[in-house]
Length: 272
Length: 254
Image 1 (cartoon, rainbow over the protein chains, first blue to last red):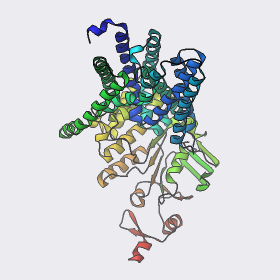
Image 2 (cartoon, rainbow over the protein chains, first blue to last red):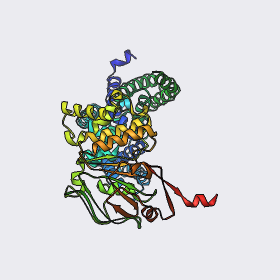
Image 3 (tube, rainbow over the protein chains, first blue to last red):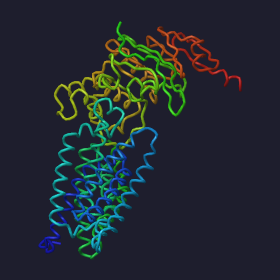
Image 4 (spheres, helix red, strand yellow):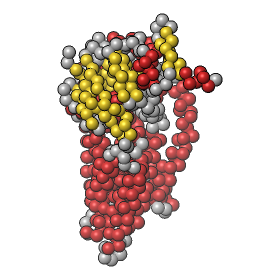
């Protein structure tokens, strides 16, 4: 791996993994404790429509993804809290419409779209510098917003009804969904639209078993994310297999292993 | 005396079902109001209307002279023993600190005064020694007390409690009621319960709710009141202190 570091694309890949891990460790922790994994799936798949639109209009697909995932987040947020809506059906529909729009836009785009698959399954080895800058900006926005609103977001995730008494919880919820949207965009380059959910939730799902505060959970998730993306990258480089899928497999197997260790951890607490 | 909370001809209909019918209620500063009634009688809904979470289909609710949404941060609310995620990584201290959010503001940092109040409220419910414990590792009674401390940390001007003794043993329950009685010296309390017995020895006003509200400005529960509310024959047995209710149907079916 060390000799591989001389290649710019490897350095970019590692940097991409790092930037994505920061976002997904922090925001993924909110997703897991608030149990909104399915909502996050809806948001991430609606981003695909934006990628298609990006191709169609000849602009950077990542910018299109930002636009669509934010729009998806706000739509789900606005409609889902209305009484009498079937929230899960709505999310399922958004999920499908996003993907369908992506396919239609790409179909309308003249010529052959070479890296269509890269957005579906990730292409961490082919990340252009501009996308790294975009990810860096998104990370900065995510970290600043979470630092500013941490108290409110914690209250919201723990008990939404009580949060409504003490803070503008509806707006906070929309902000949280937008944070998820931005995080999804940082992850698309690493693992692709389809595997985003795994990367968003696996590190946090492992951390929650071993931590007792949300801040520690976030820190641990970020570190796990960096570990998984780096290890996955190394394995995929060594054996020449798809990088995004390898990162997810490494994460997924670690999650299963962590479940085996969980009873041990709980037992220790019980003895204290 | 000025009403802190007032329901004026309030109707609530959900999916064309009338849950609350023509509720009129005023709560004054010294009140410790117990609301009893059968399950599904609308007790929780009534509290949620008071909090402004549910808008009345007809009629109006006033809290401090305005609609409840405007002054929500002056209300303390203890929800019915909720099914919180036992894994949630949050400590007792952090839960109670969320109660300060309305006073501190969303973005401003936590001040020394906030910490003092959180300590004080945890002390009040006798939970300060467990302040660093994750909430998932608390017993039902301990958790309920944390939720009361959280509500009090907001320095509320009224306290609303929904079945606060669910899942609590009788010794803790007694302490809890004593605590509420003490709090009632400063703020009015509305407590919803299906436990007719114990409630009547602590509250100073009582109302029976089963869609309609039978309000009585004393704390005496009469046979007629209960029968009007529960819509079935009810027997009152007085053991000196609390009343017990026996349902005649089950007696006869044996």
